[in-house]
Image 1 (cartoon, rainbow, N blue to C red):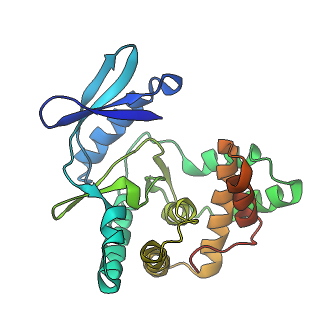
Image 2 (cartoon, one colour):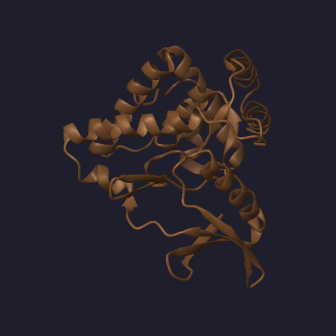
Length: 245
């Protein structure tokens, strides 16, 4: 949806791709509110237009993605990183920011455009209604190790375009779906620990988690994927594949 370029001393500009022009204004607003709420973000310095493309100017983070840290980590360190990752996600989920899109409504619309068979669609739509416990916190909804920048002792969360207000368990399940095909041993071990810790700290069981995962895999089909990835999402949505269990 965007490209990132160096932009003066200590900053970058994240320019919308032409087909997504204008989304940077939304992200800039969300990042400003997230910073005011105390969340670890690359602070926004406003919106600019360059070559007819809108963009948001952000602090430049010196570090690397958490993915790189994981690939270099030993088993004991992987467990510690997973615990910190879950803590960070839950701190986001405990935050409330006014004016965010409602996640459950968005998911219902995406399920309706998922192309799932009628029987599966009906089941997942019913599951979504049953899973909706009325809780609303900030769901980053693109929370995975590639969107956590490690800068010294600090972790900074980037890419806030998917943010919504919704049940925290949905955000955890979305993370499992986003990383569901990652098979490298350090990352697979990390994600298994993220699931275990996440379920424990959210106070939900395997069945509830798997139900959320199925709903989110089905909703993701509305993004228009094809080929093997679409087939995999269908299998997850239909309950044929469990993630990191």
